[in-house]
Image (tube, rainbow, N blue to C red):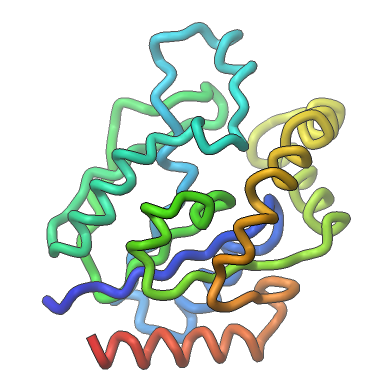
Length: 207
């Protein structure tokens, strides 16, 4: 197999990163794409108490097992399957089971901080930043965390103001300068997604 094309899709919480990745899937044969979520690579915290896990800053680069992610991306590029970790947002730690991800022509890595680390950036063929207004992002996060992660409105807002927003301003927003393509308004920007898809197909054909 030819060396896979690695696409990084970054952006703030609730910006629409996953939607952009799904839109690309709709336009390209999904059998050719593996999507890796950065959230899967939160560090294992099984050796500390649940109360201690609640105090972890999950929006800081140090919350991620970057060494493992780098190894897995390198393995996928070399045509080797990986055992991707599974992270639970309810227990705030890695689950015992893992998921086998096979190397495919296109690897999409999606997450808020994937452009922050130069080592990860250097593995990417295309770096994308999804740029969405803060008010839209916080509303999306509130809805997601209450529905999918069983959080209260008060806890979501408190976490956003005390951790998420400061970390966004310190780490996420500055990483936008490393993007090759900036997609305003996420998955609703059909023109930007068409351009991104065309570029991906061009890269796949040239690899």
